[in-house]
Length: 93
Image 1 (cartoon, helix red, strand yellow):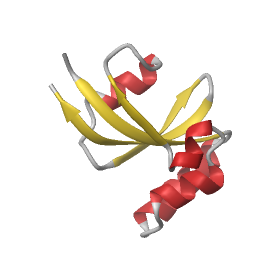
Image 2 (cartoon, rainbow, N blue to C red):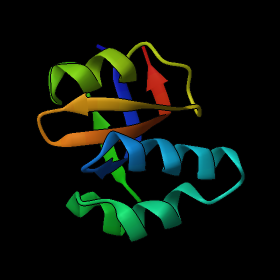
Image 3 (cartoon, one colour):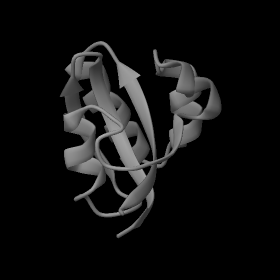
C-alpha cells in the first residue's frame, strides 16, 4: 500500500497562494511561510501533515500527493477548505 508524507500551506485566496509559491521559489523557507500564513492548524508545525495513505485526505490532495514529484512545491490546489501549496516530502509505493 502506498504511503506518503507531505506538508502544505492553506490560504483563502488563489492570489495569496501564488504569491507564497513565488516566495518559496525565490528561496523563502516553506516552514516559516506555513507558520506565518497557513490557516490550517498544521501551520504551527510548518505545515507537516505526517504520513498517510490514499483516501485519507480529500481527493484533490490524493491526486497530487500520489502523482507529483517528491520535494517539489505544487499548487495552487483548490479544495473545499481553500487553496493549498503542497509538497510531497516522501512516498513509498
